[in-house]
Amino acid sequence: MDPSNLPVDNVIAETTHLRFLNRGGWSYVERNNSTGVVCILARTSENRIILVEQHRPPVDCKVIELPAGLAGDLVDQADEQLEVAARRELLEETGYQAEQLRRATAVTSSAGLTNEVVTMFIADGLKKVAPGGGDESENIIVHEVALDEIDDWLIRAQASGKLVDSRVYAGLYFLLRNDGTQT
Amino acid sequence: MDPSNLPVDNVIAETTHLRFLNRGGWSYVERNNSTGVVCILARTSENRIILVEQHRPPVDCKVIELPAGLAGDLVDQADEQLEVAARRELLEETGYQAEQLRRATAVTSSAGLTNEVVTMFIADGLKKVAPGGGDESENIIVHEVALDEIDDWLIRAQASGKLVDSRVYAGLYFLLRNDGTQT
View (tube, helix red, strand yellow):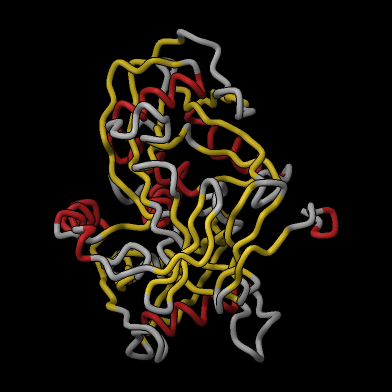
């Protein structure tokens, strides 16, 4: 979409990270500190999927997600490319470097209440080069889950009170569709 | 989670549909007009997947989504069960009644910026009983897409400037995982 053609928005309120807007009577939020959002479905050579777990204040519980983050949220990297951001976030959160990274798709998070669109990447050829765990503002647990056990693992996580982000399943779809290693 | 144990939130702003909140320095939005959100991966007897398309003001373009809606958003149905809401929304938006409806999972939309959790259902045994298209406030186009062509169809939709919601792919994962009809 061409931003110059967008309807005029009224800012209802704004915090450090979010802007609450009204567009022709429809209210929603946008991130005001980034140029894009990325997530990465990363698979190790042992066919394990890398998931991250962190407490999310809005739902007040632990959430299982794909490694993810914002592009262009650092002061000196406002024009950071999405693929560069994906590689940086994967390394920061999980300690893995990816040999191959390919864009799978881009998806809306919940287009009735936010303009957030997340670009999804599939990472292969992983090499562990750092401990991971996120930057100083994050408290991230990294899980490496065997692909053929991941459905049960996610069910157990939910049974123990955790939530799962929709992109975990969306990412698994792309993996499953493209190589059929899981049946 | 037990709502009585939640940290106290400050309301920053509120509109008809959304409440913008601050929880210990973390801002997010919540829907203030429903008790839950549901979506439905519905498959016809001809192995077609039912998708809906509607303009979403926050992203200012057409979005391809699973049939979805709010539970408990009608004045006289505040305690509406999620499965009842799923059946109602499927009928309203697509005109289909489902013989079988099973809960697949529940997923967060974007737990850094909203507390929205969407419960996903898989519907089978569909029977067309009404035209669909949503209620008077909605303007919904219904698509029935052959399962073995859906990846290409979604790629073409995106190439034409539409966006796709993450739950479309998440729903397809559940379908694929459970019956392996698409390879």
